[in-house]
Length: 246
Length: 125
Image 1 (tube, rainbow over the protein chains, first blue to last red):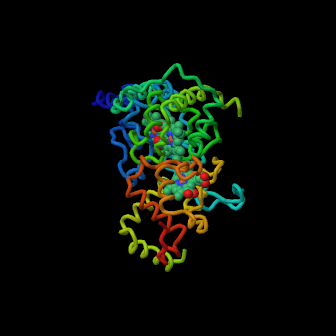
Image 2 (cartoon, chains in turn red, brown):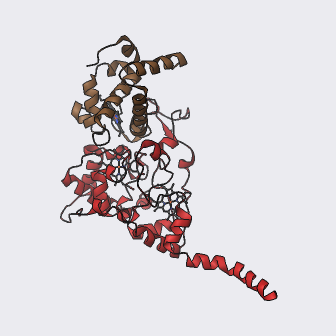
């Protein structure tokens, strides 16, 4: 009897440690991520389904992210979408009286949770490595990136790239290319080059609908030459040190 | 909008071009895709406006919107601003919506700007 008590005591003390040490990447995803993130697909097919999505889809993470970015971000998660996962949940049409309108007009403002720093599960290094490996295994969309290739001969500067993003295609209305500079309803673009695979960038900008049928980024019909330039620009941009310039 | 006026508008919508179902679809589409720039009430005051050097059109501006034909509005939505000699900051939506959905959006915009004219049965061409 005594031995049994001792044994069960030991089991209670040791098991949590064992479990977390033994929890492989796939188990981390299943136990700690699946409650918010879709790990199976498919992406929402109707607007009503889209409205139920609480976190970005991860079922094609292996076609999308750079592994080294995942490992870092999972240890220190910060906000990527300034207006949240669906901007409609986080806007308000009655701004405070103090807000100055643009050209004498008032406009909708962000409010609530989204103005505060992102609350997200944090992993330690070992867990982040394991989770990143498991995420990189999720590659159902091979066909969408097959044949996409960054043309290493294309040259861009920060200025010529910004011209494309702002004046030529108007991406800036929804995306920021510097903290606080640009629109709110799309993910920040100043980290996109470090976060996302070049093939994904080429494919997503070419036709967002292929990845996410109901997303509110339109197909901007970017010409193939310009598409190459934009992706080169995003990679160049992601190497800027934004903390230093602020 | 006063409740009676609202009921009237809703009734009108049902009676006019679209079965109620279409009106709802158009509203959902407008909400998800257009409000980010054109604003929650279509007044050209969406959350992205601070980042824009060309202001989105105020869809409730009766005077301006009455100067545009349905065909022009249709083209602006489908092919973007440049198709009607306007800014690229109005994006093209041809890959997002079906033909029917774009037509329904034109109808929805008319309810925002031109209720009186809808009532009088004006031909928007």
